Image (tube, rainbow, N blue to C red; front, top):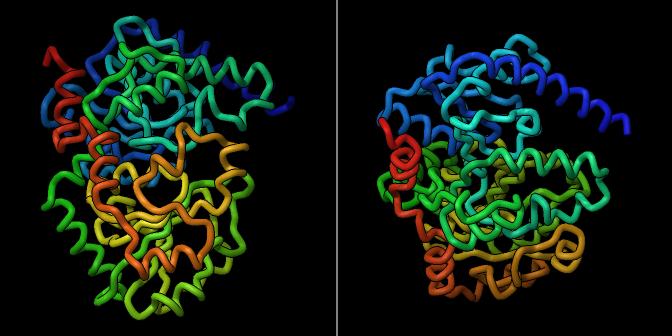
Length: 384
């Protein structure tokens, strides 16, 4: 109750200030509210190349992206903990022609954009396994005020960028939107995977940064976030067992969700903990076999046409408590295993079907042809 009261007060204050700022004229500028940053970066670069719109980035505290090609004066560290920056950011949100966001941003509940403005959601995942939005089962026990707040935020999304009709259908359900809200241009960051030179360049950089993978095939373990904790005392995978069976041929990289901390991790000749050190696209560029579960990473990795294993040791529990949008075992493009032994056996016996990955890519990346960013900017800035 105390938390809900505090959030209500915060949003009430923000709403009053936002409406005061709305009195100012609409300005020819693009404001980007960044929680993750990779899609924001791609779009910012293309907006700069194609238009004369001024670009400002509101960088939330959790955003790790550096935005190296954006002037520091156009990057605002956006947080209520920095009241001056927070007020500046709110002013820019209230007076921008175009607003891009890349996450569920609580503040948007207070941002009643004027009719002439356009807010575009650049969601941080190119596909979705676990349910979210109005279908998130973890929100069932939240108070009514929280549900109202969720709906207010979702209603701000005039457009949502997608790479497939399937993902458009998920967003329509999750955010209570219509087909008219879907922008089927392809997700910007997918352009990377369609250009061989980009992938090759990333491979070279990663091999230089990780000399321990030289001469080895790379396994990447990239599980999704679990709601039952932000730390892990040990991995669900039996790494020692994997090393004994696969260590002569493979090197294991571990990339945990950015909110999860692995306690007492130690790198060895077989395993390297890469969480937080490298962007996911660079890690995928050197990955020979992806090991994941309910993450959205396979939707992008499928563009590289490489094998995947789905280590779903808690599938029944996850379906019950979190929810999955589709029949998991039938949809995911690779073997679904529940134990480390089954995972090892799958790798050793090469139980992969390349055709499954190809079909998955064609389905979920239908509009991601390498021109997604350019096509998106042309669609939004028609008058420029």
